[in-house]
Length: 243
Ligand code: GTP
Image 1 (cartoon, rainbow, N blue to C red):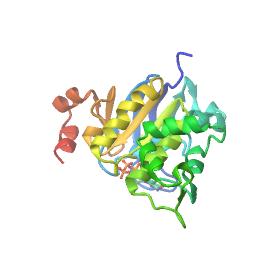
Image 2 (image 1 turned 135 degrees about the horizontal axis):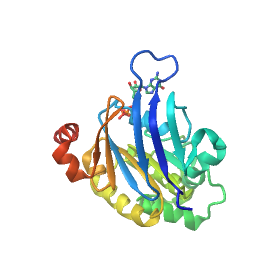
Image 3 (image 1 turned 90 degrees about the vertical axis):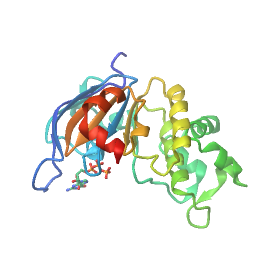
Image 4 (image 1 turned 180 degrees about the vertical axis):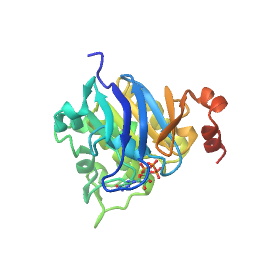
């Protein structure tokens, strides 16, 4: 359908339960069209992670509404909603087990070919294949210890194998070098052509070629547009670039 992967925020405010002071998200409105890639940038504590966690209802808005595929998330069956959305969190959540078990997690019927394809896009296939036991290599206790960047790439492969309608990457390439990150983004364009992507980042190079970029500060949208527009018009964006 035409609304597959569409996300709308309407006057969303959000406070964590029991927290005092200003809301973490303040009166945030935004529409992300199906298939778009939207970058979200802002300093630490700006509210980026909190914002995206509202979409799969890890938390509920305090006021306002979020719609996915034109339906209020509160009217979705939570399980169905979460099946459409893959979030790669900031802190990766790999478990003790083999590489293939970790990638297949959440999509138990994935074939080896699908797993290898997703791993190629995530730039994980080559280092996995280089292990003597390949995809059967055990991670963690009694197995290999991946580097931070390798763990992030396995986590991305895990999200991709699910072929979500909405893919949310929460600052999950921070430990991946810029050249590798750029190859992942290039491959993603083909692999996830019709997938709506939300890309949270700290560095401008991670979001600069997104269709739209949101600049978040203290829970508020202080800038919105393309890279060039923001360079001209958004002071916070310029500051992030120079930091
Ligand atoms: P980075 O991840 O550091 O880049 O920041 P961010 O932009 O993702 O901000 P985040 O959404 O993590 O935090 C926004 C604000 O919410 C900060 O003031 C946090 O201290 C606060 N916060 C985050 N998680 C929680 C939580 O679980 N409970 C409470 N009470 N506050 C939280």
